[in-house]
Length: 255
Image (cartoon, rainbow, N blue to C red; front, top):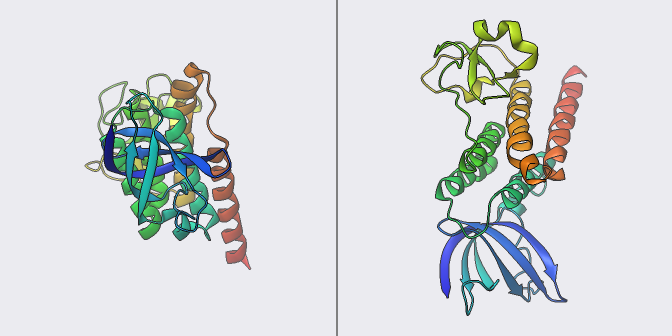
């Protein structure tokens, strides 16, 4: 059995002396693992880094075998963000979350599209933090836990959405949520349906952290905990790195 597809590397773990087991999220085949022989050779050096986009060929005698994997570089994402600690942390977190969340050998083309959008913004746009949060929400949706941010859960109101219910995962308007605001999660402006007017105000980093708190709550309580899992440490490091980078920037501006 053999197939070729575009894929993003999720992880590479040592297997014997000269091989690694590589896990990828492929466009049309989903999460697959394969053994790469001679992974540390001059030809393969740096190829199987988390976040790199490859054209891969997976081959096995029988479909249930782990198989072997060969890749050709499409975009060296890992190398392009290596010098940026925050972006590298986001890349590592995204790959780790997908790896622990998605069952193997089931196609998730919509999730792959969201991952590619995030990687593009990570390399070429200033709003990559927002796209990271949207990737986490897409991961929830692909796992059957999508949030409904289209209207207020309490009264059907479609504007002035300000909170999200941690019980239902549905949006709540500012007025309806006011008596319960201490129990609700804040809804960042960048996650509002595009047709709705912005709430106004808000700090970019505060909005990003609010988005991470929102997606993190449901990733932890709806996706990870029911399966006896914990969110990967890489996600916690991302939040710490974001906060440290923001504090350092504010300190520099005050000088």
